[in-house]
Amino acid sequence: MATNRITRSPRKQSLASVLPRFGVIMCAAVAVACSKSATSLQQSQPRAWVRLVAAVYSTCGLRSDGSAYCWGMNNTGQLGTGDNLDASTPKPVVGGLSFAGIATDGASTCGLTTGGVKYCWGWNQTFGGNSTPRAAVTGGVTFASLASTAPNCGLTSSGVAYCSRGTDSTPVAVPGGLTFASLTGRGRICGLTGSGVAYCWDDAPSAAPVAVAGGLTFTMLTAGSGHTCGLTSAGAAYCWGNNAYGQLGHGDTLSTTAPVPVTGGLTFASLAASDYHTCGLTSAGAAYCWGSNWSGELGDGEEYSGTERSAPVAVLGGVAFVSLTGGQMHTCGVTAAGAAYCWGSNGNGQLGVGPSGDHLTPALVVNP
Image (cartoon, rainbow, N blue to C red):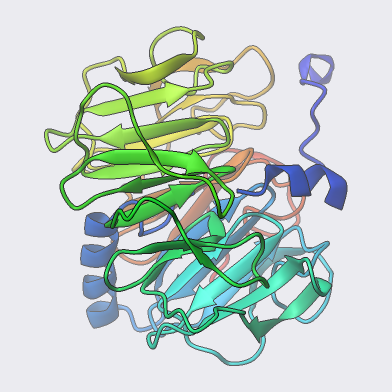
């Protein structure tokens, strides 16, 4: 069976293999689901998970008291634990800071305080790898939110988008004069206006937003490495972009430049695009995934090349979630009770379940 595994290994990776994937999903892209769940969890579970964000080979999360924890690959200090050791269970970000938001691209991580102060750790152009939080260079800009897997981009309270070339350079306003309700990105940045119009642009300070073709309006966007998905007010999912592994959910592997509906007739409450797969949640909390399945990231009990799915398949295990997020070959979710589950590749401990192998269905993250 092992001879059928695709040649891209989920095991230990070098910094060079991570940096090209700089670039999507936390509450900025699922604001309704996350805000409602966060409120209820703060009332009933004082130390519950309220938010997770996964990217490449690591995962970070916020507890309801604002404390941040990270686990998985740590070769650039992206876990913020004060060292460069991988962690297979959640470890506290050092410094005792309290955050309202957190974002990671897999090599650098940033947290946003309730006062809009941005702290970052991990890879940056000035310091190289930095394993403890530093106040980010903002040029006087105060952020209200960050793009969950593009921590170099964020929104002000008035909806103006700023991006920088790294987490340690001065942010520059995205040209075009648009204001946005949310941002998402993995290599490309996409923004959703208050009226539901979607725009995307290259992850570069001088790049201008371009309206997504098709004339659809969305209530949320989520971006993978080469694809983007949006959800309409009726709960219909649309995806576009690279479809080499079926991550668009169209029932085939044909790439598209304009949004095409996800097959299967399901109605979703939120979506989470990852590097090469996508997942969605129904209003009842049932999780479905489609796309690559190299290490069991779809949660349907299978893995290895040849088990990719070009249409949604149900995540096994019967766990109901309020939010989802995905890394390159793993997926995580938070329940209404504040429990965290992850599944897929665990080569660097990114599932947070301890030093075990891949998990093909949701596994409970160790509670710190």
